[in-house]
Length: 248
Length: 259
Image 1 (tube, rainbow over the protein chains, first blue to last red):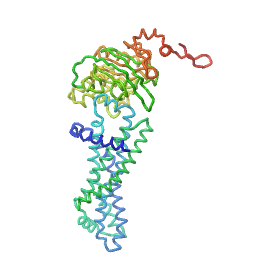
Image 2: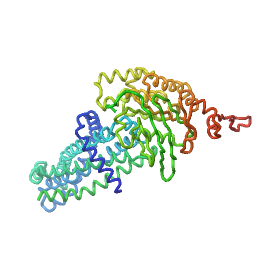
Image 3: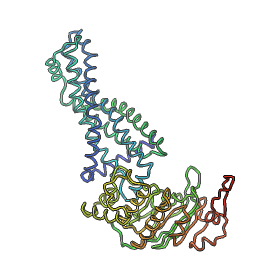
Image 4: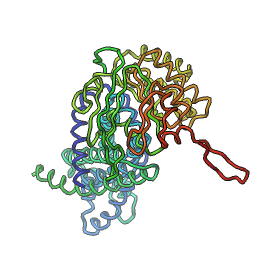
């Protein structure tokens, strides 16, 4: 485990050192952005609408029963932007995009394509990791922004049309406006950015350490997704503590 | 590789190379020399350590003991791979499957930004024509046969204009006709650019056809090093068996060896 952490940190440092090469790798970054966006935008929107809806559905009746229906927008708004959208989207992207990254780099490793790059003096970090890490660090926070907006609308629709809640859209968004501040959205985006870097690094590292044939690639993909999700959930707690400390 | 001192072929010296994987010694103190411009073929049965040896020469593996000198400079201590242009043709061709044939061949030039895109296009077309694959630039590697992939890999190596070129099993998995074409390509390449070539193979016909000198690797040791004529006359029973064994199927469908 410690060896893996060390290797991931070294890979991160090497990628940071290659950051000045970003402009030269722009075509690959755009390709990756398209891959990530194209693969996930629709699913992110559907997922977020239902997350917003279910949060409204669970908390709405409880609040309305106690005469606190006017607070529903704030409760749904803050839980989606600070917690649910960043974590759920990161888990989704770890499964969809992280697994694809590991599979692609893993098969390149198994079929000696990475060795071929090295013999041409082409750094695999610059050629493979940098574009993926930059793309996921841009794409995931953008997806989360979409997710937050769609989640709020999902929550508002359920709040206004569900007979047990019946909080109007206007009341819902007024409450949301009073409770949620720009800082809260930034809180969620900062967390997402860290998760994006973690997913990218774990996915690429697992790809590079793939051994064997197709079974090895399968094993690496599973490890990549499981490790990413576990680390996202653990990091989520500590990042939230840290960000709450700065909010005070 | 861009700051190469000159375009001359290089010499290679392998000194007492040793390598272990999981306590199993794969290379057991290997030493040999390859002269500039020479085609040096390393033969041996599967699993004798040939590919591992090649990976050490190109710097993909680090030896446990010993050293490799290119033009007298250790690859372990100096920036040899930036100083000299060295290329390798992999057994699996190792083309990047996500790139087109043209992008694969021009990858070295485009990634190191050595030429303009128009010039890269021209060079790629020229190298593909040399290996008999004119007009395949826009094809994906998955659309090519094994022999075509191998020739694309040679074209990719050609773009580097190598001073040292390493071939790992260049004729494996190829039919005899394509194997002959690849052998001709190796000889043509030497004639055209004068590069030093190290070829690893278990194809005896290829070895005798192209080699200036042949070494035989057996269980991690060099058991023969000399010219093809000397190899034919060698009395070492392992060498003799490897170069002259033929399969015979008798009337009872039993397979026997004939030496």
